[in-house]
Length: 161
Image 1: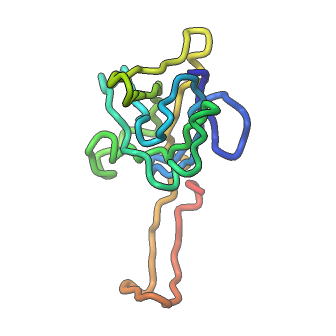
Image 2: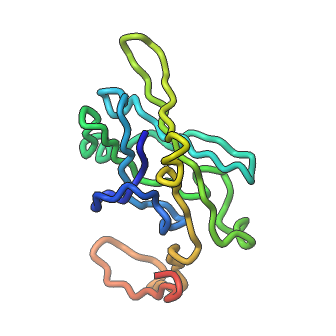
């Protein structure tokens, strides 16, 4: 694995400005990915919290956008809450969190899973940082009951946009 970068850029320098609510579109760059995009699953490791977990499965959009034969796996970064099973209210003390990433790649032919990691020299390219500063918070919505086709007014925390 050589790194991870934002989907619409060609820079492989890690992701340092993602929302804690998830949704950032990124590309994992790696040789040795399974040809079927759904057989590749990102792994998120956070040593300070003693956490390592698989990210959610790739969406159909992610699978369609991936070019695994060329070494590119498109992925939507999950939220902190989705990775850890916590609510947003439990994150008040946390302003940012950085994960080291890798990819678990399952080969259907050999029925073996390979973990693709960054070499030590390129480890800085494999980090994803989720930050409260990049997480929009919805403070107000009017009307409170919304139907399809309704016009709504909403306020978002301006510090987070």
